[in-house]
Structure formats: structure tokens, C-alpha cells
Length: 433
Image (cartoon, rainbow, N blue to C red; front, side):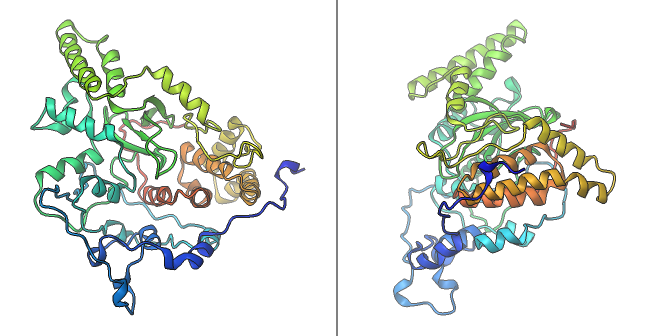
């Protein structure tokens, strides 16, 4: 019998994005790049007006582009090169119910993924445009520190000592200072250095031992928020994301403290000197270096549930009515057993039979969404992504497509779809769940 908690009630449903867009289309802001905008991303086109692309353009709607000063830094497109050969995988389709209900065209051609707009002159805006999120101040401060210790090859500042290389947004930042002409096209930066288990919420900025797939990055609960923490994952060991700190200085300081205990005396002296430089620079610039246990305590207070990633999710929950999140009516251990049976099915008939239990959970999510408990779908979708397996991709796209839409985190869905179109393991050694 279905849990009475899951039965539909008369709570008022929110308007879909399509309904809202129809009522407020006249109030959408103009794209600030004007006629120079070549962006084909559906989210960007939905969010901003582009009068020059309409059949009829009224003179009064023409966007005036403010000229930047000569002192602005010219930002450039990253070539997106990682030195890795990417494997092409078939694109997963999104269930029509998601597209119809929420009015978003998710069926973009793969060729459009490489079409990017002209680079803004402002370095921060350029990175935000390419990665769909804004980088925190400690990201730029950390880059300045790395330049202070290694001006010529900043991306590999810690490669010899810690086996770390700066990647992703750092690579774009590096190209900004080395190139002189903007580029109109680039490999898709949203899939660059995105490891197999990485959710859209996680963005890699450093890589370590690639034979194991060790990487460090920012985790944020919403694309329009600053990162909640800096965390790490080792792809060959599974999906778990471990919170390390709230800034890169603290994360690297932790690594130095661990590494210094394992090296010979000569190397130890070098690492201790580097650690002092880093901490002195942080203290001088008012950057707090906290122990990891403090970050873990802060995170546990905020998250509504752990998920398979174990770092938890955060969604708005009304303290008075408790609306916003409800538990999945199944234990994490049993959900893993359900997923395992589906992945190990010998044929399609067996797979369909083993999928009944999962489909029942998806039905519960639909009831939860009707009653504004959007966190349930977010949790189940991320659990399936964390478990792994191409067989789950359509369900992941459905669950997270709806969840991100309802939670107003659409940028995450753009990242997710791009990732699943080209999901691959970057670690040499592969292990199961």
C-alpha cells in the first residue's frame, strides 16, 4: 500500500517555466553582447532577449553596447585541450514529459555544443559565460599566489611537489594572459576534466594522479551561489565526494600537511617552506585556513540528506510546513541493490522486470513534486548518477531535468546533458560500485 504521506494533496502547484515565460516575456533582459552574441545554448536564448534574431526588430529595442576601457583584460576562448582522447557516445534522449511540461528544448544537436559566444572583455564574465557559474574570490587569489611562486608555468605550480595541476577555469585564465585574439569556437568546456561520477554541482579545478582519477574542485548547491566547499574525489574508488575546506588555500595546506609526513628529510624541508609561503599569503589577504572537521560540521548542519555522494544536498525547506524535501521510501542499501540488479540483467526482458522497483520510486517522486517536495527527485537522480551505468541515463535526465527546473537550477541540467552525451572514465584503473 502506498504511504499516505505520498498521496497527493491540494497544495498549490507552482507555475511551469513555460507559463511564467509567456506572462513575462516582455520583461526578459536584453543580452548584453547584442549582435555579437553567437550563443546557441537553449538556456541562454530562453533567459535573454535577442532582438537582432527576430524577423522584425523595433528600433527602440536595439541594444546599445557599452564600450570597455582599453585597460580591460582581453579574455579568450580556451581551446579545451586536455591531452586526452574523448570517446563519442550516443546522446541520451530526455523523456517528452519533461520537455512538454516545463517548456524547455533539451534536444540540441551535438554540433551546437561547440558554438560559443565571443569572449567578454572582463575575465570573470568570460569564465562565467563558459562554465555557467561564477568563480569565488579565493579562486582568483589562489591564481595570484601560484603566479607568485611560478610565473612561467603557473598551471603546474604544484606538480613536482604535490602532483597537482591546475585545470578547467584555471586553464582559461592562463590562456587569457597568453593569447591576443579572441576565438569564436572551443571544445565544450563543460565536459573538460569532468570525471565519470562528477555531478553538475562539482567543478574540477585541480587534478592529481590520473591513473586513479584523483581531482579537487568546487561543490556548489545552486549555480547562482558561491561554492559550499572545496572537495575531492578519486574516480577509481567510486563516487564519494569528500569536503576538504571552504577555499583552495586550506585544501592545499591540508595536502601539504599529509604529504610532508611521507617524504624524505630533504623533500620535507621544501614542502614545509611551500606550506609557510601559502599560509603567509593567505593570512596576509585575510583568507582563513580551517581544519577539515570544521567544514564537515558546517556541511552536516545544512544538508537535508547524504545521497550516495555522501556530501549531501541542500534544498529550500519551509520550517513551518516542512515542505521542500521528503525521504525516499527506500533505504540507500536497497536502492543500490535495485540498481545492481538492473545493471547485471542478462537481457532486456529481465532488465524491464528488475526496473519495476525503480519505476515505483520514480512515481513517488512525481507525487513529491506535485506537493512541492522537490528534494526527493534531486536525491534519487543524483543517486543514480553516482551509482553509474548508461542504462540509467534516461531516468537521470528525467528526474534531474525536472528537479533542476523546479529548483531554478537550470544551468546544472545543461552541464548534466553535456556530460551524459560524453560520459567516460578518465582514470586508468576502473572499479565497480
